[in-house]
Amino acid sequence: MGMIRPLSEEESLAVLAELGWGRLAVVSDGRPYAVPMLFHLAGRALTFYTLPGRKLQALREHPSGVVVEADDIDSATSWRSVIVNGRFEESPPEDAARLAESFRERKERYAAIALEQLASPDAIFGRILIEQISGRAYVSSQSGLRE
Amino acid sequence: MNSQDITLERSEIFQLLTQTKAGRLVTLDPERDEPYVVPVNFVTLSRSIYFYTEPGRKLAALRAHPTGVALEIDHDDGIGAWSVMATGDYRPVTSRRERSLATAGLLAKYRGQAVAPMWQRAKGRWPEFLRALAGAEMGAIRIRRVSGRRWG
Image (cartoon, rainbow over all chains, first blue to last red; front, top):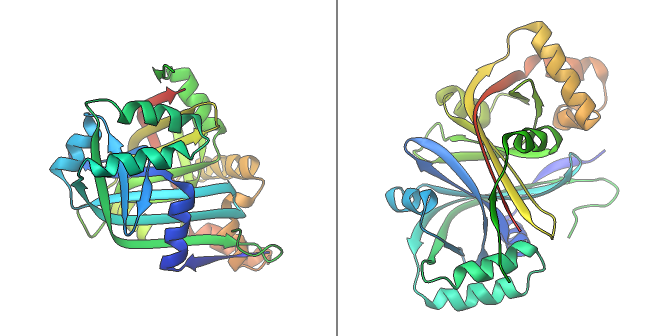
């Protein structure tokens, strides 16, 4: 039998750095809207790219109340979950090179697609500045918190 | 390398909603003008998504903003990634029959782990566990709209 325990800020940031994949949730037309996103943790910000569409429109209309959720759920007794509350800002093109670098290191097929997309002239680069971060993990009494 | 961005068929979306274990409930924060996101264990039965919620921020959010609640599921298996969002209105399940069916569905899907936090707090004692289960709200989202994409 294990237990659920809160993660410290450092642990939560480490989970974000490791996963690099989560869901961006924004308010769009007064309704919640969530889409998966690849990101790179840079200091206390998540850098990402997007193409013009509903997500970007919602971020521009509602930059101050953005949530990012990232989790790693194998089963009900093996999971970690992190929630970020933050603020969106468009970022300078310098972020693009670092983001591309972080995608190149990833093995997921999606990262290869992302590399193609962020090279597109339509790609917009952004940051979610982390204002609040919290995390929880299920700790098994046998194995302890997975690293 | 050419990438593909495919819109998923409705039947495929419902299959994913039935098979996928972890989902994220996306609603509006009860106190701030921003989204509220939390992972949930859920079961999809006849076009409704069922899950347990204990008193707390999730339940407060659902009660404050019951319309247009979303469940998001996604997966990246190394070959490709997909994402599905199902949207509908939240309602507490009050029918005993519906609650029993959904509880059975949850227990079958997760082999009991769907209610792990309650089981854990009851420290494996059945009377306490059953009390916790009875005290939690069983909620449902009647699916009104689904969308899904696959990249790969």
